[in-house]
Image (cartoon, rainbow, N blue to C red; front, side, top):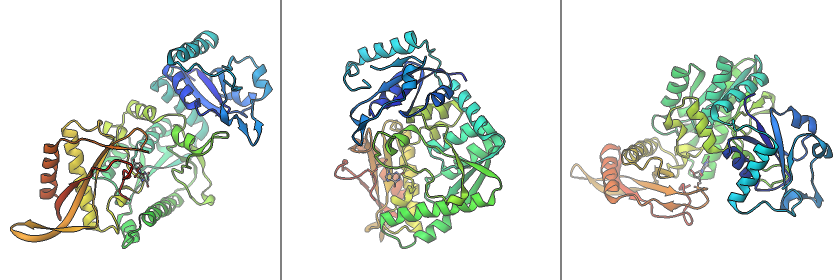
Length: 429
Ligand code: XMP
């Protein structure tokens, strides 16, 4: 294994992810593990140079203070006990924290600053090969950042032992299913099963206007399609998942309460009985993107803006119809093209169009015509909990409006949403 590692033992501090990031910023790999790890388990981790014990208000669980095993205090691995009993807090000042960490990591532990993406990838390739052996792995490849990066990493490690299943549910953005096929099947020579399930999803969704029902139908149908494909394949032992570190943090650790639970492919029947392969589960989002870049994925995939799991299904408001779905897909493609051309791609956090179930009167070819309207939304946020509206130049909005009303069939009007979150949410349903 190529990288040295500092282990943060989780005694309940919500600061632990920050500490792990600070150590990685020093160029040394760091992982967080539960407080009840045994010494044998700790020593089985690759190249552990030191441990950090950091407690906090959650250290008391059900009235009992949790602690690590005495054998870990007694062992020869250097340990930093700077706040683990809650009486000697970490320096609040960033400079002092950095000095304390540098001193521990480099002087006391003697770790090398050898954490970089090439070494991470080399180590993960070795770990994946060790875990999987000569068995087969299945992966649901949506084309989102996390599943694309995990696919590229698994292809690097085990090649054709991986089968990727891409379910086209008809709710992806323009060009996305084609890009998945091009990048993974044509360029990376992966085993890719492409499932055209568009009619199936749209038939199930016909007439359903309630957003939560739409989400449930999309989620359940996805699992059904994926399960059918899985049953067609022989001898699959493992399921690859694009779980990343924030998913784990939000799902809660043994000591930190869950914010929400995450299931990338939740709800698969138990008789499918796969073991999980989750090589990105210790990476933060920016590191996942860096990993994707290092594996040769295109920028358009690696820097893809956030996109809801139910896709355009929740941007075609109310009951989905094929004409409005195409209108939202085409108008979204124009918006993205114009934002890229005008230097807003990568600057604005999320931007898209939505189409309400609303016609208005207009004039086309000198005749009165009732057509759809399209809403443009462009927002900035740090954590998606609150958001502000991007100040898009007016002449650009006018240009986009002209393009949408002339190029997108059945649309005669374009609106711009000025509402921050709150009171609006980022999506419309
Ligand atoms: P809201 O609309 O709640 O969105 O302000 C916050 C962020 O979450 C995304 N979003 C979703 N992502 N499944 C997802 O995977 C969903 O059902 C979903 N709904 C909203 C949204 O795009 C924004 O980035």
